[in-house]
Image (cartoon, rainbow, N blue to C red; front, side):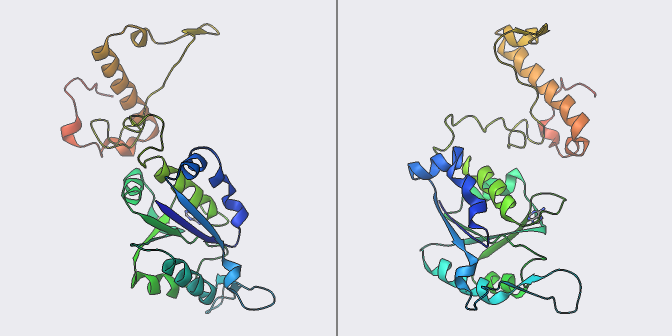
Length: 246
Ligand code: ADE
């Protein structure tokens, strides 16, 4: 998969050299290219923003540098690019969208600063490619770069060969399947006793059926406590006759 990021803070994307995404890059599963938006300005101050039409606080990112940058980036590859525009007014980023984006060959991110990018930029590129305006949560960040890091990590770990164990995202909270829309329950490792605290006996029993039942009960309990909104979203077909009334 190819990923391009156009930003006024290329150094903000340095974490893409580290850990899972960094390893995926060095193994060749990910081709990441970070571009400085100011390279497409033409004035002495390398200006990327201006005051909003209609008045109001803050500044708006000018369309011209974005247009020149995106024209050049989009012309630099083959295949269908998908534009990902991080914005608090976008559609919520979910595991489902991560899976959808992981199936694309080429993502181009446009993290904005200030009050956002002149609207005509999204309108222009909607004519030319698939565009997703995406929010990573109901809060406002100082810019979209942190959102790019979040989305990239969620997508990259779904790419074939990126996670050590191909099974390890099968049971993720939010993964499709029997446990869809249930949060993952607690996990334990050695030692079996720590500071007087015991690992639940069932996990040491070797009884796969009882372990699966216990995990599901814990997932249901945790979901009801932390995300009651998700319980209603579990497909009725996913309910099991042993599921306890919570
Ligand atoms: N930019 C600022 N806040 C954001 C958010 N919540 N999600 C995505 N991009 C953003």
